[in-house]
Length: 438
Image 1: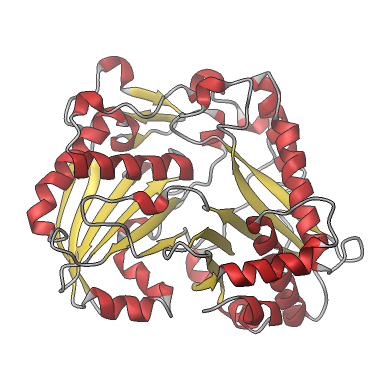
Image 2: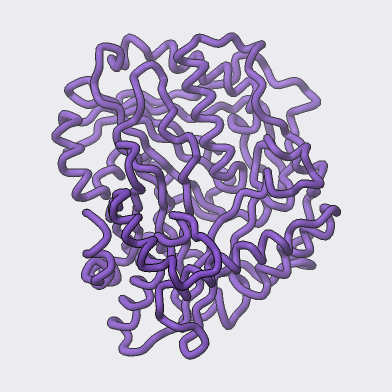
């Protein structure tokens, strides 16, 4: 399969950004976000309404109206923690692929790495060296021979987190489908820097640990599926040993993490320490700061889940407990009334885990990310073509797992990104074979 780029343009806000909004300052949480682009892609099966040529103008115009509200998306980073909002525009790529979508999906369900064909190629090698010269948002629409579509959006993590991205995509789809006028678009606030001002990070945080090199790490992805029957079976296996009722996500993350630790043991010949970070959206968790509930940008903390051989046991309920307790402890630590105290709490968490030389900076520690997108309205992105039938996420910088509600509405899908040699060992784990379908 080959993707051919048909056209490239820049979509700008439908109305010029006012002078007083043309310099958007990053907040503390933007500063500590990864200096990467995060692509995602939605696939839409062909219907009477998916002919892109017939909807191209409507899609572009609705994006232009969205950008009038979410103006930082069409700006560019400067070197001093600002986004220059001069309406430079979102890069918008139109492409086509020499395949029918049903044929592509049949292969992609078995090998989700094929989804990379529909990512904007500009986003593939974004890092700290070129982040400031790359558009903050890049969108690519890829049309299949049958009329099916792939819509991919890649965004700079320093500008916006998962909550911001999915909110923007869902609102854009509504504006496109319902032809909502620009004056009625108002779904986010832009006040995070007022609450969490830009900081001198050198006085708060240890130096940043470099991410994996995409070329050297050669991460591959697999898509797993666990149905409701298997989740019920998993609950029976875990439940009797706990004094709390674990969530589905906690149980599945525990199962995946234990399989990753066992795969590492097979690879190295001994049990190694493991550090798993679970991103948590803080918007609805900071009770003392209701004004940030719908804020654009980054507002989250990573819970550092640690496994230490000899201290932690290998029983599944032990993994569920350490995930549950660490997430709870992280939230309690961040639940302060003062923004200054929240910044201090987050800095301490990171300095003692992800940025610590004996954890995040150690080659003797296996590091993973495990992110839950369950209950995010990611499948509601209907531009008038129906709902997406397959999704693909990730930066391919970090080994880890992405959990999301299955497209069929029954169960949970997991996208696992691992180094190739780790993936072979992970796939052979008995729990993975017993509970999941590939």
